[in-house]
Image (cartoon, rainbow, N blue to C red):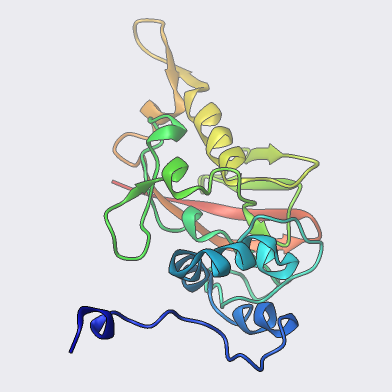
Length: 210
């Protein structure tokens, strides 16, 4: 057997399948599999990046309606349908770090920075939201993130960084104490839960660990 015959055959759609159906077929894949498809061949990468429906499912294109590409278990029953970007639920980060330090668990590989994964400018949700109310879980005022163009992953991180640096108390030395210090050991980001969408507004609890 030659080296050429040992090489895997290029993955292609059946030759008699009309091109219009390519995107429809791929739209049934979950987010992680769509990213894998992009790495298979340039043709498939171009399809995922140019097909309007696939652009929505990969959080690249804004949509006012819900497109299902998997069940989000963190969404409340009384919420309108939605999907949060996987990077915001599978991220390694601490609230006292800049957004550039956040890393994404992707494809069981080593963690990638969000910039390297190419997701910082992705929309945070499907469909897009314009107001995000983030509760810290102790009865205080929520963190509010807004964008008329649709809130992105970077918008969410920047909103959390700004809030974490805000003074919430004064120490014995008279110096202000930022929120992340007041949180003590509970500054490890663990995603969001209790997701509830109403129109273009989203409410969620910020999950933190130590």
